[in-house]
Image (tube, helix red, strand yellow):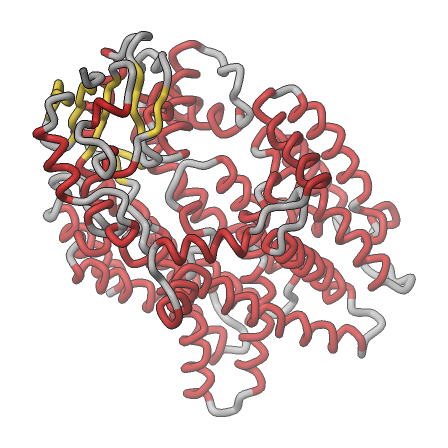
Length: 578
């Protein structure tokens, strides 16, 4: 029934293609498609959880449930492209451009600090003959699926009971941990989804030295994958070394003499550090981050909470609405963090009662990393100098990938302790379904979370290509924060925009001036997409940056001439007023 539901959902979405820019994919896609996908995920969850709850020795039939969760995830992540989306704005289109540049020139750009991702995709494209857009758009979904599989592997290394392993795998399969990292082509996201595999190899090498080879190879590659993830690995090795020093009391049962937990992480940490430092120092693009660390240390960090408060005020979200928005944005993390913390307490109490609990101590080592990442994120929120310069806002995703393993202990304990099985089933279902639903509604930006859809339409792409091939060095580009022309340089194979870039003033300056051209001393091109107009007139209307009358006045302004229009993308030539 689950696979039939997914087939029907896919066909229904295929028969309702996107005809242009959409404010949100959830509202634009037939509701019944989402219902059918949810039904398939519920079937997959039920198969696995039923085995975890009712059977003492689960057989291999749980794999059908896992397969259903995997195919459901792929269906959700492929849905935009099934409906005709071209690609996504932001980092996605930037890395797509890097990829095209490598395929065309045969070498990396001088500012490409993420060569592993682009090399991997380029090899796939050259081997299979598939299009660049197809491979780039769909590849992240498979890394999202790989996260589920690697979480299962990590669970087998740290959770001795089969019930715990199945619950951890179900959590990873149901919840889209990492949000947009499951959707966009981002090396940072890919590197995060691979971390469970790295930790699996790390823990396995403690018992079987043969795992040291793949662990070392993957560790060496990480600085070229993403510098922040390499830094997190260094922090992980340090934290777990300290944790193991505290947790171990000369217990070595089942471990090799050369790989005792108290010292096993030191060499990998030093190797990672020796590779990472020369790599990041070889790029000018990291100089601002290093400089920012020093500036924040000497003058103080940013007021992150104050900035969040100002943003909420700007979009007129207060009181209950602010609480609801927080729950939409961070509800998944909040639930998983609480459940994971309970799992840590349960394991700590069990380990204290046993002097020979090896696996439990290793589990607590991973738990110590979870707590350290959470503490670092708290420091980021409190404005700790240097935290924002290393991407402190991303630390929540790094902590999040550990939660399926940690939370599984809590859920499995509930299964074992609660005698009334219907109550157990209900509790487990709620703790699985609620985070799954919240995470699904957050992976795609939409009005639901007061964010614009990152969809790139074919008409928008044609308009950008036209502008970037037209623009000369003597003409300025008047751009807004939502206009990311520089990101499209590699994707469109057009010349890089030259000339000055001028910020687009609010209301096109009509609040203080009669003509838009009065704001400039030289001519400039103003690109406007239907996506920007719809966003400012609907989702961000309360911000008040642009109104319908502003756009109407622009059309009648004698200093503004429309030089390109394909229905979804317009380019205006703005000349100084005289």
